[in-house]
Length: 304
Ligand code: NAP
Image (tube, rainbow, N blue to C red):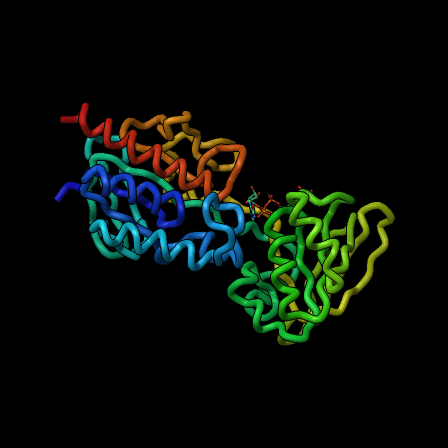
């Protein structure tokens, strides 16, 4: 069987693409190695999706997923092992099967970037986390550090104060990158203390995280800070390695598209955080997905 479109990645971009593809009556397959939701499903609260005042990330993702499932989209939870995109029919081999499609929409998103300091991998899952929504509740009454100054660090830091007694946000510069409204909430939060102009040099402990070594980048002063957990939010890397050079990407690995989500390979589109763009949000991911699916539909028409 040949699908009209195979969408790789079932986060907001992939789910929106699936919604538009299914409504255009394209035979649609969604492939995701972890199941639906993507990064959105690990976000505690979404307050900037138009028309929805406030919703948890998992709820929004699950609503999006339910909507496409009702339209008959197929989902397989499998990991891609091989992909061939240059032919007229695209071929994908996963750990569960082999699939063919006339078009492919890549919506594989990003994954959290590692800090790259001693102790990070040793204590991963034993005090080091990249997901406050997943692990926050383990830190009731404890002290934790959040590393980073972007939207994720500050917003997830705010969320963690539901559980923790004390939270440090450690950022390498004197100014945060996060949106002002998110920053203000953190500045007003009595449980949050900012440690600015500072970087983490090492995460230490015995069986689990006990303290971190911080260096002030202006003075060079080093201090040990006692914490029970470290949440790392220092940005993301695109999930494009599986493409093995078959598509044009930028120097960081993000897929280059035009505004119609077309890549340099005919019939192959990219949508959402995985592509080069200036604003990575759920709403822009969903918009990309919609455009990609409509363009895929048009491409299939010429294909006939
Ligand atoms: P980000 O915006 O790239 O921020 C990463 C933060 O980590 C920056 O403050 C950066 O410092 C810092 N950093 C990077 N490498 C570091 C290192 N090696 N050591 C120490 N600090 C390091 O990433 P993000 O916060 O995950 O956000 C990703 C995207 O999702 C953004 O477009 C963001 O707007 C969006 N997002 C939006 C929302 C929302 O709208 N509610 C929520 C979450 C995420 P510098 O500032 O010095 O570069």
